[in-house]
Length: 460
Ligand SMILES: N[C@H](C=O)CCC(=O)O
Image (cartoon, rainbow, N blue to C red; front, side, top):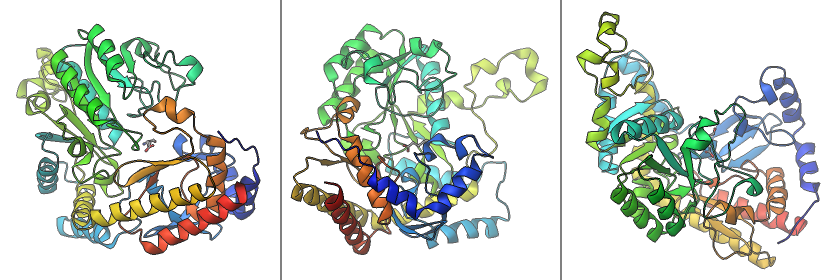
């Protein structure tokens, strides 16, 4: 493994981004750490963007970047796509409001589209984020099975709340044996209850997963998984087939968290790629067209648990004496099914139906070009990913199967590369994955490969 300590590239980054540096200092007076989402922060300070256009972002210093972060994959049509702008404007103009506060046409339209592309999602409910969707999925699993624990895989992220904010990125020394990981809390303030009641599983290790699930089958309501970890480390087909079989046999629900993979692995997500029918699925990111949304869907008999009944309305004070609220699974939200957002999402899907093959072809060209450049320099690496997402993993390993494999890669060299790329106008948050959009084309691929060539020559 190569290890580099030089921070030459970081120095060049700082020289080019003095406006971002000043902004980041001021922002600390307003928001803790200068950010409103921890993921937006990186050392020494994040780039502060002020304009987006197609495949490009422009920062406060006037630097242009080809954007491969795309807001953590959400913007699959790039920035400010005209069809999304038109859909949003038309919805507001034609409907005369941003919000009905009642059921409406676009909820049906989006629901039907989801049922068509994700046949496992027999009924759907809308939420305001992927996090909310997974939270609701877990409640449905507890209610449906009557069990009180959940299982998740080491390295998988399902949202920032207590039940699942465990062992996403744990220090290996605290994480227990590879085939029997320990639950490691990822935040201050998490109730230790969850370290007991969230069981952590080893991804892509069917034998160990089966053993843990069998041992705890009477308590585990559900296994929640990113079928492609972090959006880029694929499960093997045999692992997925095995996981579906075992969970069915043990009466444990299987939740596919497709917030990252939905529409990005294919229009039908990872479940279509693996040909697996999970019991519940959560979507977010792409399906909001750049606006905040989440969708949960799955088996009719599970989703029906949330159907309101007249005798269980938590908001009807005339009924409080009946204490029937517990008969229904509570799910509500003022903004659920927001019409403007669903209009943006439907317009996005519409464009993707025409252009997704282009996205895959550009992704493959980029992956191949990057691999060839590393090869030229004799550095072991892989572009790990499926469909329109990949990550650049600098490693001599032949396969990256899970979190612990990834931990053995050369993060120092990758970080140096990423700062170098930032100075050459290629944007992804250092160490993050690449997501490709319909607006990336030959010009952007060529520019990116030239930037890689230049930076690699400088840092190797
Ligand atoms: N919403 C997540 C964090 O704030 C995004 C995580 C990711 O896409 O990697």
